[in-house]
Length: 196
Image (cartoon, rainbow, N blue to C red; front, side):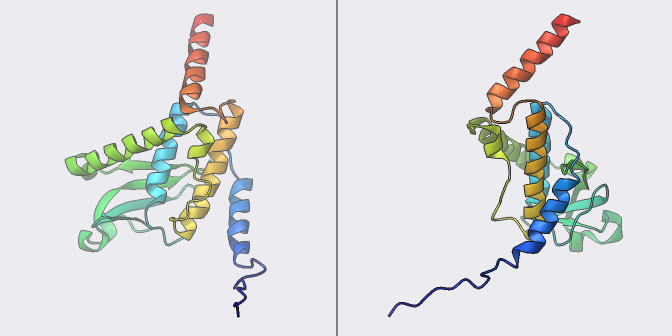
């Protein structure tokens, strides 16, 4: 006798909050056209932050603080002067979620002077660049769905992918490889300089 497997969520009710949050984020995206080098930098920084543990719903244009405790990174609502490093961990820097759903990270002075941590960030960036350059198309490198991310990180990563794809569409590089987009960008830059 075979046991019939039924879905514990046959109507997908658990997906409604995710879809609602994603739809809300996508409706408010202001994604201007950007050069490929800027897109690559913003994607790396955003993924670096989204790979950390986020246990709250980040909102636009608010300061957050990134910490590292042991091998784990976590984003916090609490600034470095408001708690002891034994509780927070090493203060990495100040983060902000922008209207185009990209993140910025201003590294703390302590982080900038930490050779081992800066080497780790450098190696992560090299691995990211290799992945980006080996992707057949730029959109293959976008975080449309990252299963390993927590809920808030997953939603924000999907919205980030939507935003960056929109930006790439405006500059006609969506569907190109990184090298093709860079060549197109360099060609446009040299044409503009020749016209001047």
